[in-house]
Length: 206
Image (tube, rainbow, N blue to C red; front, top):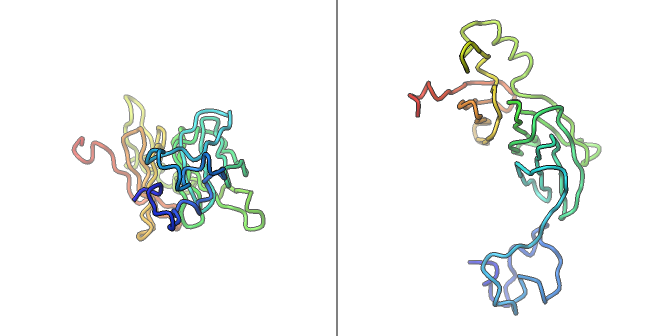
């Protein structure tokens, strides 16, 4: 049932949402007299002139937005709360799990952040995927290289193009990353280890 069609004596579950703007009865879409409003209504807008928004993620009452200026901005109750910036690569995708924020970037890297226990508005980068240790380990073996373009090989555990999608399997503790390089990497969240790299060619070109 649409929240706008709840009986007069019933409260819409969206009334408790931290993203609903306070409004007078004249413009409040959840007021029972506003029967003429459509089933879907805009309840708020966030504006910050700092580049195009490429990614969104929600964690409790916080909204994370990623843009092309390498900045991850955090919003709380429809207000600018805090922000943190990566060293390179515009932010293509964001996912939040197990107290960590994973961000996928144009430079092919996946960066991992954590909220400071002393100051919730501070975010610290605690690693990146692949880890430097894993990258060096794989780079020592010629079998771990794949040809991505003519006369250009790269270590298969690292995306050579934008990391554009992230998905988490909470039960298995696995993070999946998809890239414009037509590969999907599987990571173990516990230690950031790459367990598998799946290319388009390895599944018959599908």
